[in-house]
Image (cartoon, rainbow, N blue to C red):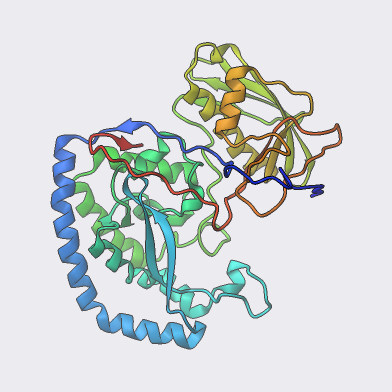
Amino acid sequence: MTQSGAPGRGRRARAIVGPIQHLTPIRLSPAQQTYLRRRRRADAVLAGLGLAVSALPMLVISAGVMATMGRPVLFTQERVTQDGRIFRLRKFRSMRAVAPDGSDDDAARLVPFGRLLRETSLDELPSLFNVLRGDMSLVGPRPLTTDYIGRFSAEQFARHTVPAGLTGYSQVHGRNSLAWDDRLTMDQEYVRRIGSDLDLRILIDTVIAVLRRDGVTDEGGVSMADFPGPQSTTDLELHGPEDDGTWVCRDREERIVLEGTAALLEPGLVELTIRLGPGAEGAADTLLDEALLLLASRLRVVHEAEWACLAPGEEPAPELAASLARNGYAAPGAAVRHPTADLPPTTVPDGTPALIAFLGLPEEGFARPLQPVRDSEERTS
């Protein structure tokens, strides 16, 4: 990608520009809240017993990790749990830091001993410490990394209404082989149905799934595919981009909310035109934000886009301009930072883009943790 300069060169960046997090309040029923409090005590007891029983196996695994991969023995990573709280997940390492050929490809870095740990889920044993600490539960939606913050639709973020889990509803129905939309739909279903009967069924099914070693990775991969963002939401459906570049986002009454074109200028860079449709009249800001989130998700899938820019001369309507700003679009040269060390392109064949946004995963140090919800009656979804 041609990069002719950094935004705001010579000026201090005022903020990191990235996608907003899509949140709406949700409430668990009183019975569900009571169950979660009781379950927390059971989690602590069972995690403590699990750590005691697995102490010797973990010692043996630690020696195996050191012999095959060296130090450190544990892999730690920031993950998201209930209400968007960030914690550090602990697992046994299964990959070398760098492959023997010097590449950072996951398949080349994964060692046979690490593959065995993954297939048997023994790499998860140190996560019992996280359960004991209250970071997560034995059962719940799998904790995802913080670099996905901003990619969830409002209904998908409902998975964070309850604590993350070592195993979960989607884990026993396909694990990492599931498509992302299916996986997150199952997480939402779990939140709606959470209770002792469902959790017990999941724990039993987990034993069966581990013994079968099904769904450990996505098809052809060594782990799970990156989450591109939602491909549809409860309120909206996006069609395109078609072969001629046109796309349209409609609500469930078939009214057009946004429409326009998308043209791939060079690998990783897409030029957009965006117009409001009749369905946007009087619509809430969240609907426009959701439509732009769908568009970004689709561009990641169709064009593997890292950057998206508005065509030179585009002048979006005020409500659309506000939504674009909330979703990370900024004028080239503005005193802002995109969540990447790469410099945004400042010119395109037709001139200077009107606005530009980074669509890729935020790089290390750029992911923005969520603010915890302080009111226990208002939970993020």
